[in-house]
Structures are given as structure tokens and as C-alpha cells.
Length: 339
Image (cartoon, rainbow, N blue to C red):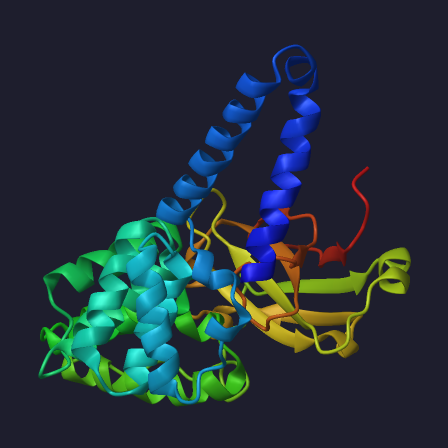
């Protein structure tokens, strides 16, 4: 620390000597006085506003425990409460310590700093529920989740939590409707776990269970509205991009409507080129069937995340608008350059 101060003073003196050189030749005493006053003012301002101790290596230490790390983070946030990531990290740390009330305080600060950040707003809503003795989502948390889904219908955690809140409120039919689109967004293992939850909510509402999916249904609705789709990769694109582990979604949706699929199938990229048949058995929502539409927009999505809802880095084929029933297969090419 002392070495730094001495070095800073010497460097400042040299700079000022060079800048004040004309005045130094003509009026040395006023120049010297001006330089001393300026150095003292700079040092005083830094001492009041800056953090001189932070430059001392002796004051910098690695936290010995989670409690020690939290204490250091609390001190840093006390010094500068505008650090969004700091409040978010503090909230997670409190949650790990099973301190939901303190976690809620931290997430409240984070939510105020980022009112349009969907992930933070969902974490804040979750923190409100965890801080409740019965772990119930209150009205403010429900409103936050609804706002997130209005902006981002594919936000999975917001959709899951909102369904829980609706079921807690005695609205099982609403919960089932909220959860059903998740089946098209998650992987097969998660969908297998989710489906019984949806069926339980539907049973509470006096509704029949979901129709079996296309892989388990013995009699899928492969009527006149069934749609054959051929999907291939553009050769040049395939030679330039690493595709290991990616998924391919073949999606039909309502033209000009919401982004939710009317029918969707998921396949591995190694299966390309492939031919699929979309029908009512591929609908993630029992209330919306392919056979009920006269026109659909069809496209294929290459997804590294494995989610049907579009994520950053996903590649879509050029969408094709199709009138049902379609007489010819729809041909889609992923990665083709725009004409």
C-alpha cells in the first residue's frame, strides 16, 4: 500500500511538472504551489470516494466457507447496491442455506433492478413462494409469472410455476392448460414425468386424461389432414457446422397465430434425411388439433438445446404454408441459403 502511494505521488508530480513547464520557467513559486495543492486535492478526493484499502493485497482473502463468502458479498452490496448479479447470487446463497426470508429480500432487490428480465422475475416469484409458510404463490407472484408468459410464452419455469399456482388456487383445468404446451418443449424423459401431473390436474377438473402420444397410440388420427413432411440438411451447411447431439423438430403451427405448435415431432439429427407424418396424435394440446385447421405453416428446427421453443442459436428451415388436406409431401431443407 505504501509503495503504491509513493509511486502514485511521484508519477503525478512528474506529469504535473511536464504540464506546468511553461509556468514553471516564468513563475516557479506559483507553479510549485499549484502543483502541491492539486496533488493534495486529488489524494483527498480519492481517500473520500475511492477504496484505498482494496489495493492492499493483505485485505484480499479467499472465503473460508459459504458463510464467509456471503458476509463478503453482503459487504460488497452494502458498498454498491446497484450490482444485479450480486443480489441474484446472494439470493441463491441464502436459498442454499435454507434461509427463504433472506433469499426473498435479495431477490426483491434484484427484481427491482431488472424488471424486464424474465429469468430474474421468475426467480423472484419462486422466492416469494418459498418464503411463504405453505409454499404458496401469492397474487403478486402469479401476476409476475403471467407477465413473463405474455412476453415469452416458451419460458418453461414460468409455465411450470404458474400451473402450480393455479392448482394451489383450486383451478386444476387452468393448470392443465398451462402445462400441456410444455410437452412440446421438453425432452422425452421430462415429458414422461410431466404427463401424469397434467392427467392428475385434468382428473381434478373432471376432464379425461390426455390422448396417448404418437409413439404409444394404436389408432392415431391419420385422416385426410395428416401431413407428410420430408426434412433434409443443406449439404454445404452440414459440412460447415458441427451437429452432434442436436435435435430436429418438425413443427406445424397456425399461420399468424401463437408460436405454440399444433403438431410437432422430435427426432435426432443423425436421422436426417427423414420423412414424418404429422397428425392429431402429434398435437401437444388436446384442445387444438391439426384436423381442425384448413391451413398450417410447416417448418423444421435444428435445436442444440433439445427444446421445441426457439432458443438462441437454433436454425429454422424456410417455413412453407400448406392448405389441408395436402396432396403432396412438404419438403423442408435446414440451413439452405436464402435465394
